[in-house]
Length: 236
Image 1 (cartoon, rainbow, N blue to C red):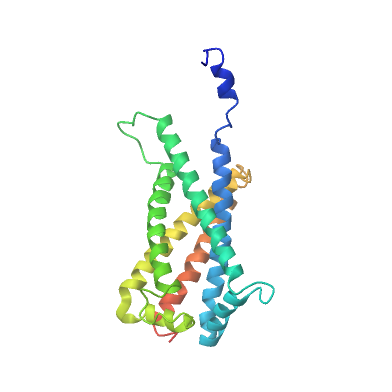
Image 2: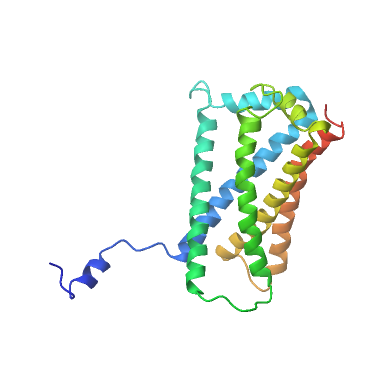
């Protein structure tokens, strides 16, 4: 039987719960991994402006990289696993932090003036939901080809052209909304990560905010250039 005097000792022996600071580091690190992937993905997408052969060859290389030392698609699947782990870590950390914030303030204010922090937090939550739904659709569309009008695994250029054809304007609209949500998420995420890693100060605050905004704008412009190029006939 455990006595009252023994209970503190038992509690002391438990592994410590993750602190909020640790969870913020996990969010920042996992977000950085996904941001690097987004940049690489955007650069790959832009190869469509070099022609069908360029982007199709690039897509084939992604499946073959590492051969013959490694089996086909090994590196590609390693990237996917790292991304999946980063995504889960990011969502779990964000959820725990949000719950802790709600518990710390159990009584809602009768009236609260909107501030930049609360607006950013709402944007991140809703943006995260939009992005999650879009990722599922995007995988079924351009990865598995299930929802793509062309849907041929090796014909990346043809799949993109079929996907963003003028008669499928609603796909371009949905893609645009999702990419803009990514932009908002990246802007706030980069800024928060810089604060988490102690790179923010009163002297550098505006500069770092500009860096975060610049990264977001480049990503949004890069990703949206492809569907709008197809939509307007620049790429066919």
